Length: 417
Image (cartoon, rainbow, N blue to C red; front, side, top):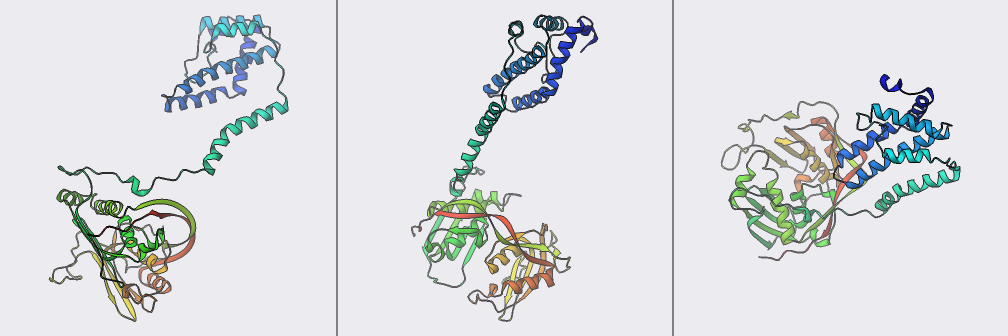
C-alpha cells in the first residue's frame, strides 16, 4: 500500500484493509486471477469467459469483505476505510491483481452496511459441493471415454492438391484394370512418378504399397483382397509428373495418386486404430563398417548395371540361391530392413536405430525358409537376425509397444476394363 494512502487511515481502518488483503493472500486469489486472465487471452472470443471473469471478481471481493466483517470489524469503519483508499488510488495497475474498486463499489458499500453474519458451511455440505463440482467435470470426460468417436476413414480424408496449370485433382489421367492371368507366384507393383504398373497384384499388396504399410499393420477386409489378382496400368498427367520431381514432393505424389485410384475403383475405406502388442524393434547392437553411409553424388558406376550396360544406380539387388540369399543395397534407407524383417516374421517391426539417410551394404542370409514361391524371401527370422547382427551390427529385439494399425472397413472388386 502506498504510504500516502496509509497515512490517511485510522488504525482500525488500516487493520481492516490489511485483513481484507491477507484474506486474498490465503485464498490465492491473485494466482487464480492470473490463470483466468491467461485463459481469457487464449479464448478471447468466448463471451462466457468474460462474464465468468466479472463474476469471479465480484465474488472474490464479497468473500473477503465477509471475512473482515466476521472478524469483528464494524461495517462503518470498514466502509470508510475503503472509501478513503478509493479517493487516493482507485484500482490496481495489474490486470490480474486485486484492486479495491475493481468490482461494483456502490453495491459493495450497501452489502457492507447491511452485513448479516452467514452460517458456516457444514462438512456434509462441503463434501456435497465438492462431489457436485467433480461430477460436473468428470461426467463429460467419462462419457467421452465410454463413447469414443471413431476417426474419419482414411479414404474420406483425401485432399485434393492443386498442381501447376489447369490440372486441379491429383489423379491418374488413364487407368486400365484387368483380371490377371497369374494365379500364384511373385507379384509386381511398380509405383513411379509417371504412373503405376501392377502385375498379378492383389488389393492387399496395392494398399501396402500405396500407404507404405507393413503386412502386419493391415487388418480386416473380405477374403478376396488376398486372392483376387489384377493387372493395372495407370498413367499420370504431365503436370503431376513434373510436380512429383520437385524437391521434397517426389515421394508423396505417386502414393497419393494410387490412394485416389484405390478409393475410386475399389471403393476402399480404411480407418486407423492403435493397439498395444508385441513387436520387433530394429536396434543398433554395435557399429559395423559393412553398413556404409551412401554418397549423395554416387552414380554407382562400379555397382550393378542394367541390360543396356549403364549403371543401375540406387536400388536393391538380390542373388537368390537355395543355400543363401545375397541382398546388395545401393543407396538404401534402413527402413527397407524393417520392411524385410516384417515380411519374414509376419510381425510389425519398428525402426529404433536412429539411423537416417541412405546406406550401402551387402547382406547374405542362409536359405531354407518356408517361402519357396518367392526365393528372395526364402529364409527364416532367425537366419535374418543372425545375418543382421554379424554383418551390419543391427539386431531384432522383441518388445511391447503401441502400434498404429490400418483396418479395412469396406472394399469392392473393381470393374474390369
